[in-house]
Image (tube, rainbow, N blue to C red):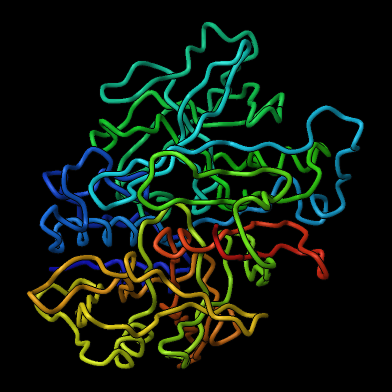
Length: 466
């Protein structure tokens, strides 16, 4: 019996997403498979494109499975610091010492693949510096607090005078549909608090996951942990994120952070906090409104050869995902507008659809977003996942049916559709959610603004990367 993520999502939706945990298939951890924080496979010698230029479907299958699990429906909690309070929080006075900060990110380049972008966070008193993965697709900060095989470091809690352990359990389960918040890999520990400094911006008491156990999928990863940057409504700790705490304390000049991601170079990527960095983008920043304060979720669409392809769909802008995943019907429309493209029936399956297209194609594939008439092209190098044959390549937009974490559907403009039969109510949740990852973000400077210009509400902005 093949138990797909789509079936799991449908069952959870029908039961209100608060059902008992549902076990999903394991993800292989051998050569070519993922070792993910809900994202990528650091340490693999060959990623989605092999050294000879051909596509590695073992990697693609594993990543798709991990992405499916990362974006399973979650328990959404009220934000401890309500959004209204964040929007009304004071901005930092110019007379204070620190109001903005930049975190230099390291791109783990393996072959032609940009695997993962990591950077330093300081925790404890005195501070201890650990490398973390900055992820807009999750909301928790977690790091190891003991030596773990394969981890690049851990927080020495006995050396921090401000560390406090709450004793409450912290657990991210590999195969638990209700509790799942990342892709592949278990982490377990307790919830703790300590001082956290990010680019010199200080949160005196930050809740985080003090991890004591990790599954082997994390061995060899360049990041010791994750710093989640989505909204705290989906945080496993149930506490505000680092950025939300900085905003609430009035420590930022502007209530935003931004990413500049490079392509194929170890240095040069950057996370900016409290202000945008004009040195990394050209033109103006165009904003699209956030439709759900869970992920940085927006209404997106696809454009192929200058023409819209398929319907619009809700999508998470996710620095923690390598590729681009769209609803299956949208993927079909995209490749129908690329001359010579066709479905890869051999490798598609289990809710995931791959397409092949002529390697010589010059058709421009782009994304569009609500509130803007612009289209945002995907770099042809990033779109090409590798050779399928001597003349065909595999496309970097993958079809996948995923339910939005809160059951919302932009295309239907309602949380779900209800039908009453014989006194019973059946709930049908559309599987029309997308994830837009680094394949797109390497071309576009992205800004995550809690109070965007003109609206004063959360929005994601884009401008051309320099």
